[in-house]
Image (cartoon, rainbow, N blue to C red; front, top):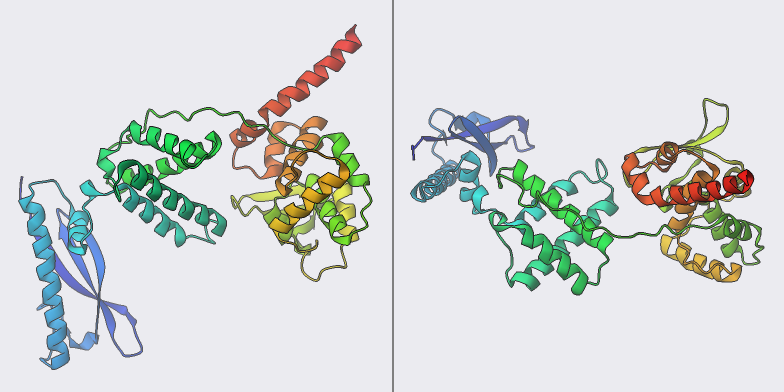
Length: 402
């Protein structure tokens, strides 16, 4: 292969002088007209740097040590460059840096290494582009994938370049047989694996997607929600215990607003604004997707806010953990004779179905009110509910036409 020259240049970050009057020294690698820079961890007073000779002056003990360190970095870089040349493989300036840092070059990048890269990048965007909870799920996925690789292949990692469709088949089998995961959970894990592969391709670790032909396995998901009768029973039930009444009221509030637990807990007076129609609306961002929520405040939801308007200085509703909330809901379901396993999320499902879809609110409006990222998400969850609603209405129509 054609041998090109590697240029190693040390530069000063003069725009950032620390309290000691020193600035950082960075190193720039140039190869095949491509550049890559990295921090050396070294600092110097800019007045004592000779950029032409690439060394510190005058010759003091401190400067001699610094010059030795710079020389050592250059030697290690050139050694890494030489080793790549000896292997007679294609490489670029990034590979030279990786080789110097003791990392795998792009061609030899591993799967779990790329998963870790994905999560380290995501960590820096927590609170900006991603919610902390979503990042924690990815950390859980990383641990799960490490266990899978160790259990299935008896290795600590596998090369990205060796991945085939069998990898996903093995993962599917492992998650079901060893972790007892349902297909919906398996599909979510595989979806994350494919995001990691997409990152590998964008970084140049892979030339193509080894899972391009993969099709997610279908699963049947039943949407659990309260019927009109169950919702009415819950609303009319009189509770002596204050905490049960509060949880019931908050649950009902979410049945008429569709708010998830995170949004319900974060709801404040500033989130209630007068809309274009003169009515009160809930305006806030959904934490899970960072999408805007704009929900009209229905009368029953408004009544509940009135009940608790003087109970809290900050929030509009009582404060309770999600775990305790669901624990109380279990007790409430038993008292009301509701056989379904109640959780806070069922309120959101009830809003979408019993309150909206069963009252002929169009799917696109339901999607907007729920704060879904796109219509396909809503359709996937509630498509069968719409079919059921149509079937029931057609039965009524058939009776009328007899």
